[in-house]
Image (cartoon, rainbow, N blue to C red; front, side):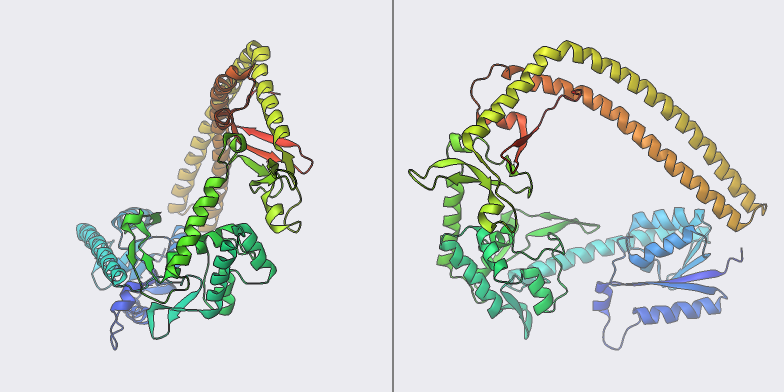
Length: 527
């Protein structure tokens, strides 16, 4: 190998860009490239490729071009990585140890930091590289604290910091930290509140807006406002107003003219995962912008929501199946059905989608309350009686199955283990042959690829066998759970809410009135 095939790695984060003052773009991608190109030519390195990550933090290794570079490194595409500094490569101490002191040396690849003098070929500066890694990580931690502190100060000062405004508002052209009313969307928001106060449910309001051809907030922001907006909680194919969207609008305090921010944050400066903060940590600043909904109207909607929530399932008779009953086709919850004549009392359940949005979205799935209760009670007693009739037979059967399966799994796992060890020996021998120039690079790559493929297949077989063994143990435990769950209900007379919650996961109602019960406990050995 020539040893002079080099690649350049360039990186600029948003924080770096913010620090570049006018007339000083020394840290820019363009000038990083000029600096590294000059260095490579001066030191007689042959530039094979340039990798560049713009607006990417050095704390994470899921940068697009960084990942491509490390993949090419494993394929032996180059010998040297040249970056402006070690911090351009990474600001994470764990990644410095992983890549600079483990992966790259094992691949025979050298790393050079032009400005800070980092060179992995020089073993003497390893400690300085580690110290630099710590300093860079401390810098990121301090920077994160400063940014969070600055953001919180701005939030407390009533400045809006969100990337996208709540539906009904847009950013003030004169001050992007201030909200102004978007008249068209605000009109829709007011209509939603009016419909709800007129007695329409949230799903029905969504159906009305969809039927009128009104764009959902995500599409409105993209197609009308021209924003590059993506709702991570919704599918790209979603075009109809949903219950959840209406619910969110009816509970958004921003419409009263208040800013509510700092509702979520990341676990740490090194972790992208977000968590919801308790309300007492939210930053609420009142009267920061013009209200769309008057506070009195907003409060009326909140009280009405609580009233409607309490009225559903308020008695044990009507609430036995609350939260467990679903339509078998659209998978949405079933809604209560009331008699149209006479007392108008509760008589059963009907698909909520069909009830609120009509036949275009689902067909009529319904069942009367008495039939449902009788069917569920009969099913529970049937499951209980199976224990009485088949307990001794099932006990012997499951023990025989368990022993047979475990013996088979152990024998197969031992066979796979020996085969993997053999292939690993072949890989090591192939590498030695390549290093001694007994085989070409192409043959080496082909052999290794074949070995890796076979190892992957064997690992898959090993995983499947382990899962099979675990499943056998799980079946054994689940049988005991099933017996314990049902044995007390062999002669039960009346269905209760506690009984249903203990045994049943969900119940689905079919179009013909039939039901499918999904129990929390099933006999795993049942034929």
